[in-house]
Length: 232
Image (cartoon, rainbow, N blue to C red; front, side, top):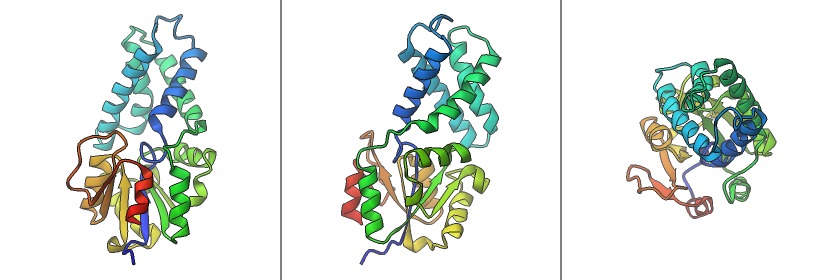
């Protein structure tokens, strides 16, 4: 009999295909805000620059070095600055549009629905722990029809903490009425999900969608969500 009862999932990059959905969203904004006419002559190049700044600012945000509002608009501001567009008003407008539109995108990783159905059929309690913004994450789940799969949905805003900090995992365990020995964290981010989970006393599963190097500290590594059937 499997020792686990509570399965804590990450959302972005684990179940919800953030990269694909973000690219589609930014492409819509690129067109709607006439960036080509403003000198941004290649969308793929613009998306690469945005992704670079987004990743760097998220790293600062998770380390408590910047606030949420600064993350939200400065990633757009810095991407536009690469094209010598120093337009704070446009940056903030596009940032708001991005967060409004992004949750409407519905691309999930292959086998997401199937594996969640499988796990529910095995009577596991499923939960989410995500560093995403509260309203954005709930809207993603609603639009992808994932909300009903999860008993507890823990966001950084709702818990007043961020992965990999132990406090967000402690808060999640408290909300789920779960013990560490019967719980496991499932996610793609080595620092936030795996090391964060380990530091909180949880077993972990590294979801290696990108086929990166094996991370030895995780209890399990999978390359496709279907492989969870071999664990549970």
